[in-house]
Amino acid sequence: MQVMAHRGYSGAYPENTMLAFRKAVEAGCDGIELDVHMSRDRVLMVFHDEELSRTTDGQGRLGEQSYAELRRLNAARLWRDLSPQPIPSFEEYCQWAAEQSIFTNIEIKTDHVYYPGIEEKVWDTLVQYGLQERVMFSSFNHFSLLRLQKLVPETVKLGALVLPESGPHINPGDYCREAGFQAFHPALQGLTAEAVQNCHARGIEINAWTVNDMAGLEQLHAWGCEGIITNYPGVAKAWLAGR
Image 1: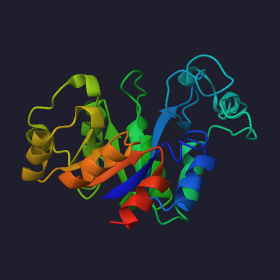
Image 2 (image 1 turned 60 degrees about the vertical axis):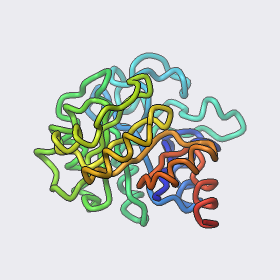
Image 3 (image 1 turned 90 degrees about the vertical axis):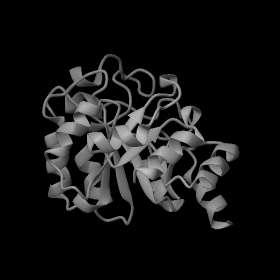
Image 4 (image 1 turned 180 degrees about the horizontal axis):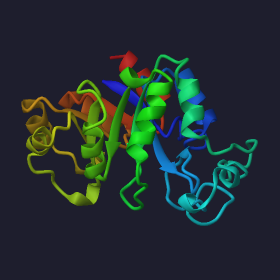
């Protein structure tokens, strides 16, 4: 079972910062999960929310700010014992990731605000840094995944994200196979043994989020899920190493 660091090592460091990504690699994660938006001047930025105020000292929507304005913000506002951390550009991340051995699960953040052309721009950046074979994509906006189908090789996995409030997942394996998605990315809280069985019977892998407790980790391992997305990759890797 592969361990993906949710927004980097976000349980101990500011989420979606280069510091959190470096610490996740030091902890031995197999992959990093991150989120991509686009600035007003069409620069890809690694950030989770549409709004800036939760994790930075800025205000307003990320997509309404320029790259220069975004880079002046502190993405470690909630971590007063740390030095300020800038919001990384996606290109900055890719330049760093090209020198690492991990893969990247890229969430295209188009479920609330759609950025025209973001899928093409993300893929072009990955090609520029030679990362095409070490990535997978996910999104709550499954239309973004369908757009990516036209851009990426069949070897690049696409994962359908679903929210826990969606309730019990009925035949997610059938849905993903019909849509041409290779993976199902449910919240841990909404996942059932029946959904897991349906996915595996259809050749669909499962990467569940956000797995931060031992009970969830043990259950997903027992079900044979292929991956977890966790804020504490070091803890998960240590537990798996002891199996």
